[in-house]
Image 1 (cartoon, rainbow, N blue to C red):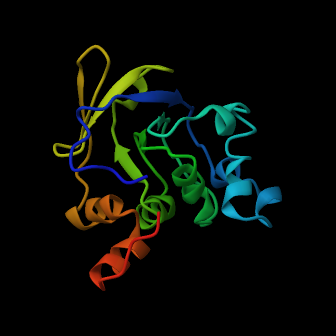
Image 2 (cartoon, rainbow, N blue to C red; image 1 turned 135 degrees about the horizontal axis):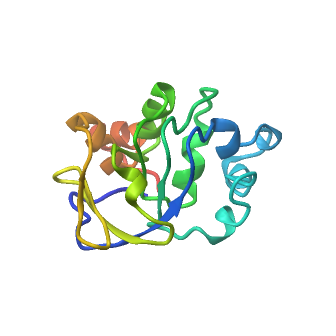
Image 3 (spheres, rainbow, N blue to C red; image 1 turned 90 degrees about the vertical axis):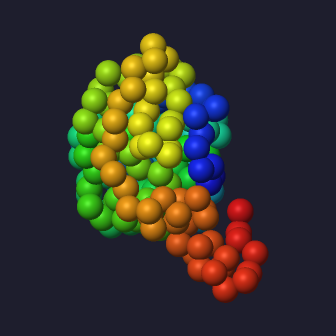
Length: 172
């Protein structure tokens, strides 16, 4: 799912997770022999068994610190894109996960106040000003993201960005 220049008109349903969500929880090792569609069906099975079957395109994940710790497997970010997750909002991310996410077109918002958001809350993402607006209207400021990374997400990831740059059609 690619983000628009400013998604302040759309609301996004929150899936709330705890701290230290690792790549094995996002893309379990037992599923890694399969393609991304099958791996996605196991996403978060150990902490939220209903997630892969109930998440809707445009939903967001709000997590505690250290989201994406563990291995460098790109599939841990790609499964969230495949499931239609619009963004992951957390106080901190693993460095490898952070880069992998942008490479596959997943928006990560580093937000120190993410913990105030609630399960199933409807929030708005202000991608122009890098903020999250809660259902009560509270504006949570996120850390800056370099423009080239936001462009990568808007393009649907690094490969689509390169396809566009060289005059080819992006892949959905």
